[in-house]
Length: 323
Image 1 (spheres, helix red, strand yellow):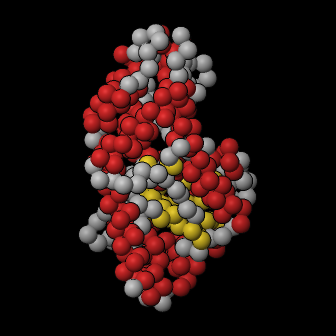
Image 2 (cartoon, helix red, strand yellow):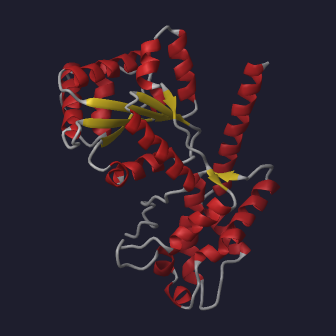
Image 3 (tube, one colour):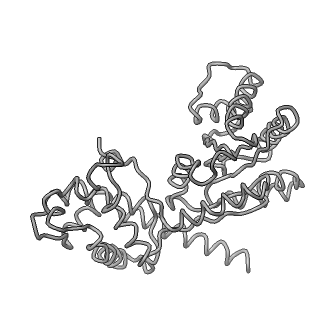
């Protein structure tokens, strides 16, 4: 199945590249911990996946990178935490003893670190806003064992929703400054996809990315072979796509559309490629109706409404705190 049809690809946006540069600097500085907070759908999981898949390009063999995800529970126990982390790493276990799961978890991290020439590992935890001071203490114990027993240099990157910043404040209020120093010393920002040049760049990527990667047709050519053979590129319609989405958003009460969530962007673009590009004849281009049809098909507006409301709530919260 084509990556667009499977929604199984990542575009390295300028914001993502900036975030990756920050992560690389974090690794080079050997700081023990950093956080990336951000609202839903800005592309945090996309960024993690892209960085993990391309870690050698950015870090060479000096640092190993592993990623995992915290699962939601009403109350997270030690057994649940290590079981969920192992499962998200691709190593599910039937062991029920918490200590056995902890040992397996440490073993996987030591195994990863052994692949790096300096026995260094970057541990990325997604949905980290679900952690608390108890689970952070469990991870601090893992950190200590890795350093003391296995001589592994480990760095942590906690990625999650905006509540991750609140977690930092909560842990500080509890007097757990050592946990903040260990896991939350720095903040590495990940921005949204900006309208204008960044949006045009990301649309143009569909005219460059290929499947199969080396010698296959571009994503645009795959879905509109005849039109592209005659010279069509979807990048030439980037401004029309953006203006159509901005106008639609404005008509539904979203006043500012200077940035777009990656989930909304890829959802619309996937539908355009799969359902609109095959309709193009030689000499055709996308039109307003085709773009609106795809936007409606993926409920694009509801995704951006959620993003807009999240931004409003964040601003309101800041204003209330300031007051």
